Image (tube, rainbow, N blue to C red; front, side):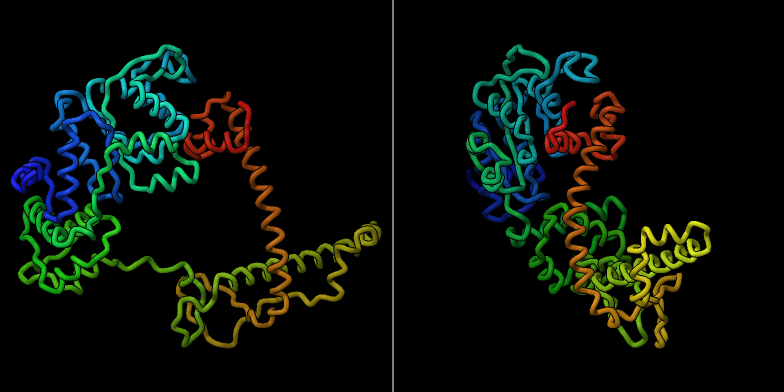
Length: 431
């Protein structure tokens, strides 16, 4: 295509930019639109992949047919087959009527499957049959139906890695990847960043009836060399923030001001809630490990005090002596271990948050650290197994309580139906 034709496509679909990588992607999309080949669009999240699916549909012979965009990662695993291929009445709990799926309602049109890498393996097998033969079967039915739908897929993950990790079918990958289109991230598009920023700020200034912001030379240089992990979506948000929050628009925005929006201050770490010694400017004077030691020492002290209390009570009871004799191993540690007591430091402290917290001289207990770490290691392994057993037990109880209705069981457990389905398979739970 010549530059004029490419620019006409950009104007029609609101695409801003002149980078060679962007022009190449548009050129491929226009060329493949005239065919019925399956297209796989790759690119990072927020780079504008859906716009290319609309280009392919709108200038194809299917342009008068339906177009639908589906985010495969947003549909629960237990319902995605029904959404795509439909279901018969009574096929599962809650299927009160028959329902057409997207492959039936968009017959003669185009389906855009976004985040196709998130599609479950079972659904991938069904999709492969549609791509190979144009055939599908509704959930709960045995009747083979036909459809004439063009599939355009997109992903922001490396599908070859997913294939190697057995999370994506290899045959489906090569069937989808008939014609690949790579949408470049914003950081690879050079001065397109400035064009997009100016377009967004002009749009927002018109919407909010304010003067458009301008950038000085240093700010423009900073914007062009920023990484933009969120791509166009992130740039648009930044443009809107600056338009709203910067009140003095007579002078251009400098690099220091722009950097404030590009790298916002992160929330204060939770470690800052720990008491700090006077003169200590670090918010991390206690490491997380030291905090864990403090908790364990406090627990040990409390247990020692509790044992003392119980022993004193039993010594004054009629049959307490017999109980102490039968269980003397529980109280033997009281005779040779000095309980750990938290003593206030002699140094004045400043607290970032009330109420005042006790501090512990952790150096006094360095000898116990190795022993505690060994106990933690063993306990973590045992706890991991017990947690899996408890999780399986809770899932079984929730399913029984809700008559094996996954939707209500998932709601009772506070998880998504898709997660519940995966856990059922993981623990091999019979419903």
